[in-house]
Length: 149
Figure: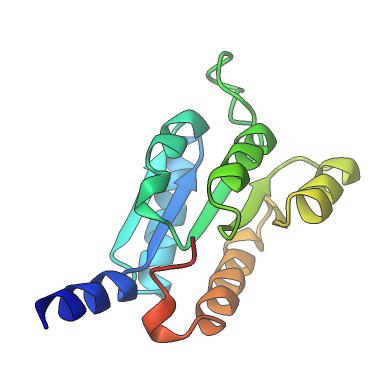
């Protein structure tokens, strides 16, 4: 009886990871998501992808990944390298690549090879992230939302 109760609680928990080395941008995005989705209580920011990988056991519903994670931390892997590692661990994870990268080849790799959505960082980026989150959450039955991975 208690096991079923706790299982339902954990299944309904929605977690979003934001992997972004620009602290101001990451905090702004987190605040935006919290405002638009007040039922999502657990939004975690990581400055480098390697730290995100250490927390994948928490089974985030969505990972929002910057491409240029090694711009401030030269030893860090870039976003696509981290996404490949996430997909190895948790292939069902829904990932959006959010980047100022304008090269079509980067967007194409993210979309086709890694099963991600690509959103260019511009004035519409937050609205597009909101739409992405809505689509993901609307496609998941309520009791399964904590078990995407």
